[in-house]
Length: 480
Image (cartoon, rainbow, N blue to C red; front, top):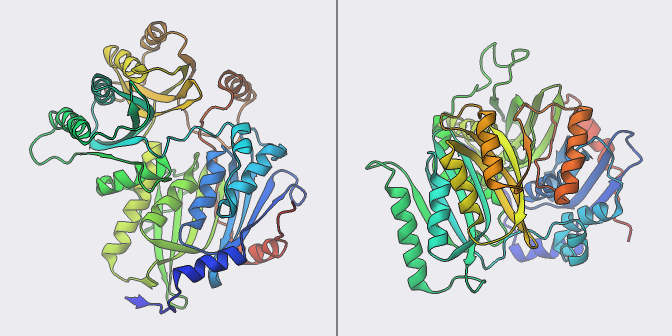
C-alpha cells in the first residue's frame, strides 16, 4: 500500500477558506461557437465534482466535454454544455439558476429563480422515505403502493430501478388524510411491519431484501444517487461481468461493452482509471457517483465522446490519501464502476410519460393496470409539481421483452389521458433527428418541463493538461 501523507486541516478552517474564496462561475458563450462553456473555480472539497455534475444533469443539459483539475486544494473545471437540441445556453433565467446552484454555499437558489425554472419539485425534508431493495419481480411496485394506500399514506414521489435480478426503490410519503409528516411511532411501526410482510412473502430463506423507513437520507441526497447507494449496499455489482480493459480485445473498435482499466501511477500516487462504454444520458453522473461514494477523490479527469462510444479518464486516490496495490480492491472498483454504468442501461422498455392531477392512490391505480395487463416496470420516476403528478415509467412484458402494441393501447384506454406520450426505447445517438426534436418540443409544451434524462457525451483526449491550463487561465468571477 502506498500512503500519501497530508497535513491535518481543521474542518472549520476549510469552511473559512470557502467563505473567503467562494466559488466563481463563468458562463461563457463567446469562446466556442457550438456550445456554452461553464467554468468553475472553487476551494476544493470531497464531493464537489459530483455536486457540479448533478446540477447540470438535473437541468437536462448535454455535457459534451469536461476538463477537471483539483490538485493543490483548488477545484477547476470546464464543462462544454448545450441544451438537448444542441443549442447554446442563452436563457437568462437558466444562466442565473446555474450560477446560483453552482454557488449554493453562498445562499443557495432564490425561490423566484427556482420557480421560474420549474424546479420546486423535490420531496419535503419532513416526508417519510421508504427505501427498499429486493429481487425484481412483476407487480412489486403495484403491491407496495396498494399497501401504502390502505395504510393511509400518500405517495408524493416514487423512483425505482432494476438491475439484473435486483430492484431498488424509494417512495416519499406523507399522511394521506391530514397531509404533512407521519410522526406517530406506533403507526410507523405498523407501516414497516406490513411492508416487510409484502416483500418477505416473495423471498426464500436466506435471500437478501431490505425495507427501511426514514427521513430522506442526508436531508438533501439526490434520489438517483441514493438508488446507486442502495444497489451498492445490496451488492448488485457482484453479478457484473463487463470488460476489465485487459487483453487485445479490450478496446476493439465498435465494441460497446463497458471496459474498465486501472493502472498505478507510482510517481504521483494515483490510480489511473480508464472507462470506455456506450455513450448515453447521465453517464458522467453515474460514474462520478460511484467514485465519490467509494471514497475516491478525483484529482484530474477528462471526459468526451467519439461517435457512439464514450471514454473517461480519472486520476484518483482514496480519500484517506492512499492507493492500494491489492488486486481485490482494483477488482471491486472495476465491478462497481461497471455496475454504476450498466444500471441505467438495463432499464430498457417502452417509456410512458405521465401527467395527471395528483391524488391519493394515483400510483397504485396506474401500476395495478400495468400488472393486470401483464406489463412489468423496469424503471419509475414520478414526482409532484404543484397539483400535478408528472414523470415516466419504463415498461416491458413479464419476460422483459418488448411490449405488445395492443397491450399498450389497452393500458392507455384504461388509464385515460394520464399517459400523454409513448416513446419506444432506443440507443441514444449524439444528434437527434428532426422528428424526435419536434416530438420533444410538443412534449415539453404538455407538461412544461419534463423530467427527462440529459444526454452527456464523453471521450478521452490526449492533450488534456495543456488544454486545461489554457482554459482555466481565463476563469473569472461572476458579474453581478
